[in-house]
Structures are given as C-alpha cells and as structure tokens.
Image (cartoon, rainbow, N blue to C red; front, side):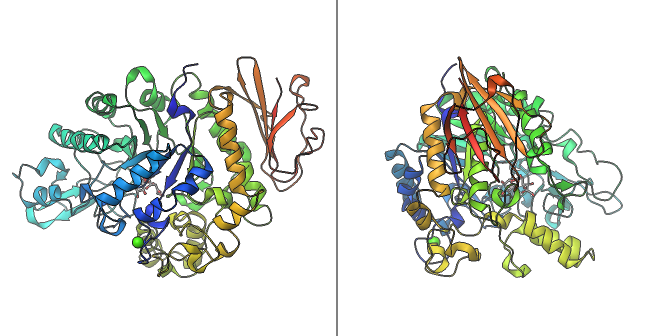
Amino acid sequence: MKRTFWKEAVVYQIYPRSFKDSNGDGIGDLKGITSKLDYLKELGIDVVWISPVYKSPNDDNGYDISDYYDIMDEFGTMADWEELLEGLHSRGIKLMMDLVVNHSSDEHPWFAQSRSSKDNPYRDYYIWRKGNPDGTPPNNWASFFSGSAWQYDETTDEYYLHLFSRKQPDLNWENPKLRSSIYHMMKFWLDKGVDGFRMDVINVISKAEGLPSNGTAPLADGGRYYINGPHIHEYLHEMNSEVLSKYSIMTVGEMPGVTVEEAKKYTAEDREELQMVFQFEHMNVDSGPGGKWDVAEWTLPQLREVLDKWQLGLAEEGWNSLYLNNHDQPRMVSRFGNDGEYRVPSAKMLATLLHTLKGTPYIYQGEELGMTNVSFEKLEDYRDIEIHNMYKEKVTDGGEDHAKILKAIHAKGRDNARTPMQWSSEANAGFTTGTPWIKVNPNYTEINAEQALADKDSIFHYYKRLITLRKENPIMVYGDYTPLLPNNEQIYAYTRTLEGEQWLVLLNFSAEEASFELPEDLNPAGKTLLIGNYPAEGRADVPLRPYEARVYRIK
Ligand code: ISL
Ligand code: CA
C-alpha cells in the first residue's frame, strides 16, 4: 500500500455563481468564497474544486471561456483569486481549477481570428468544414445542447463544430500549436500555485478522422466518433509529460461515455495520463432509452451493478472518483434517497456510501446540508441553456407536452444543483442581499448551514464524522471492496478489507425496514459500530430501519 495524497483526500466542489455573493449583485463571487473558508475547514475537506472562474460571456456559466488567463468580471479580480488561494493554502486546503479545453467561447480572440479567413494562422485552432451540396451541415452529429453540432459562418462560407452550445466552438487538438497554447496556459496557473485540474469533457477532444456521420438520420449522437477518440491517449500522455508530471498535483478527467477498460488506460499509473476519471454510468440508471429527459424508475440492483462494476474493475489498476451529484446533476437526496420524511437519514446513508466505497469522494456544495431538488413552475425561472434549448426543441418546435417536459426538468434539470447555497434562514438564504441570479429553493428556512452547524445530529456533522473517520483509518481509502447480498433489493452491503482488518457496510436504500442474513464470519453482533445514521444502540440483531446506514468493524 503506497500512500498517496490524492487517494486519501476528500474534495469539495464549489459552483461559484451559486456559493456566496459578497457585493449584493446576486451573483456568487470569489470574495464570497473566501468569506466561507472557515466553514470548509470545519467540514474537514482537503481540496476544493472550483467550477470555471475565467473570463466568460456566460453562455454556459463559465464553461465558455473567452480569456484563460483572467478572471470573470462578475467573480472579481486576479487579486481576489490570489487571496482565495492564499486563504485556502493557509488552512491546508488545496485548490483544483476547472480546465475547459475541449472548446472555448466564440468570444475568445483565437476564435475571432479563426473565423476571419481561411488562411488566418488561427484557422486550425478550431474545426471548420464545408457544408454538403444539399445545404446540410458537414455531418449529422447532434449537439449535447440540442440541434446540430455545426454552425454556419458566413465570413468564410464554412461551418464550425460545437459539441455544446453555438457559443462553445470545439478546439482542434490535432493542431500541435493549439496543444502547446493549452499547455502554456496550464503552466501559468500551476506556477501561480494551483494544485490540480478537473478536466472538462476531456475524453472527447480527439475526433475520428473524416468526422463521419452516424447513420443517415438528419441528427444523431456522434459519440462513437469522438468519445475516447483515436488520439486521446496520445494527447493526454503528451500533456502529462509536458505539464502535469512537472508538478505535484491532482488530476481528474470528466469523461462521459468512458468504460472501465478505457478508464484503466486513462488512470493506470505507468501510462502517465491522469489520476482518476468521473464516469457517468451510475448517472444513467434513471434514464430510459430516450436519454436523460426520458425519466425512468431505477432500482437498487441496477445502481449496485454499475458501482460494483467500477469498484471491481478498477480494484487493481486505476482509481475511482466517487460522486452522486455535481453542478450538472440533480441533488442526490432527491434522486437516490428521499427528500421528504427521510431526508436526513437518507442523505446520511448516501454519504456513507460515498465515503466507504473505494476511491476519492467528491462532495458538491450543499450536499452536506441535504439540499434538495427544486421545482419551479415557470420555465422563465430556469437559467440553464441546456434546459431552454431542450424545451424549445421538444415543446416549442416539437409539439411535446409542456407538463411532461416540465416534470422531466424537475427531475433532471441541471438547475436543481444550481440554486443558491443555503447559508441561513435570512432572506435569500443568506446567499445575497440583492436579487439572486436564480431563485433560492424555498425550503431554505429549514435547510441551511446555520441550522446544520447548530444541530449536532445534522447531515453536516455526519459528513464531518465520515471525513474524520477516513483520516484515521486507511482501510477506508485502501481496503479491498467485496460486495455482499447480491440480490437484495433494499440493502447495499459490502466489506472493506485491509491487512487483517475488516469493515462491514450495510445501507438500507428503502423507506421500509430491511432484515438481512450474513455468513457467520460477518455477523455484526457484538462488533463495534463505527458510524451509523440512527441513534447508536449498537444492536446488530434488529432489522435496518428506513434508510439506515451502519458501518461495523468485524475484524
Ligand atoms: O449535464 C449534461 C447533460 O445532461 C452532461 O452531458 C454534461 O453536459 C457533460 O457531462 C459535460 O459537462 C461539462 O461540460 C459542459 C458543461 O456545460 C458542464 O457544466 C460541464 O460539467 C460543457 O463545457
Ligand atoms: Ca457578487
């Protein structure tokens, strides 16, 4: 067991726009984050990953960057950023920045140059193609944010590729000049003291030769031609040798569509690419064949099957990152737990899962308070470009039922995660003294940090205990994972084992009591209950109560 910081760390994700506003303009900012560092220290996390804070016209809330070397006006100045870094470092907390280099903003000067003429030196920083003679775009790939992934540009009578919004043109990684511009920029931030990068959709940067259409439909998912594309490992290895390997840092690649086999390649230490990846398979268990907005029921066996696959798949080689929500996903307690009667126990149960699987846990802001999904009744209250584009495509243009799509937005929309952080029961949850850029979840009067800090049985304090337990017990980081009760529809159970020590984890994913039978050598009767989300009577012989979580030391 080689001890490694980034395996032992707990990461906390901040979505700056929604974390804390310091100047009353309704938008979270860097000074706001700096004012809350003691809160993060109290929670006990080791690393902050901050969603993009670079200059941006905010078509996609900072995931569209117009200057990689400067800070977004609404978030503050470079001096504010330096103060934040200093404040984190002085508390022993590291900072990971978001690296968004599959695309830039269309307002980036590179793009202005690139679109200006076919022989501009920056032309090949982006991906330009002629349209088809019949007036259709170069291929039939759909954008993640609805419609074609191609935008026609009159200046040169060609189309540019944008896998995301029209204002997010894809960068051309085949161009060595582009690659070295990116590496240069990464070094700029690392030399300023950044401790790592979370790399946005990094497994889609290499597109297949010839950019082939997928089938003959006018619009289709082109993923097979750019997910884990032909040169991806080459590029990441190059990035590693040119940049990453020169610093002692953390790296995680966000990778929609990644498989276990590919993930091993991305994260096997001897291949020198990345340390870990965000995979998405468990985020798909509640989607039907129609994709994300085709909301489906999920079952524990489905979720467990995915997590088992990743736990066992990366057991010897590679490393898992563990998350149940982020700024693109619904709130975990609403999705996988119960945000009504059992909100508190189910949030703690899910936290127990997150911290006792093998891998590096990522907490998304507000998760430690048990923040829930929001259901705005008016479409205008939503801010997310993905939601609005999808609504237009399906309802305005496609004639689908408004109520059905609104329901899907309530279940899956990204704005569920983006309502302001709930600090207190004051107006606007204490997030801003002005008008928040997106409405606050009305349940802030009950669910907020002030309440959580004051209540020793809160979800917040439970997270603190889990994080402390991890610091004291290497088994939580390095122990082998062995699944148990494979067919149980209520209980997720497994052991972790390290050098003669063994822990048993029992998680009830249902609102009903659940009894279990385990082999004699795993019988928890008389064993130490290390942590649990119900008053700790230590009774191992009673059934698990609704959403109960128990972790025992068996050996
Ligand atoms: O949330 C999604 C759609 O439902 C995902 O497909 C998401 O777009 C994908 O995971 C990529 O996400 C990342 O890149 C996007 C940005 O909008 C997301 O916020 C970011 O996390 C483009 O930069
Ligand atoms: Ca502000």
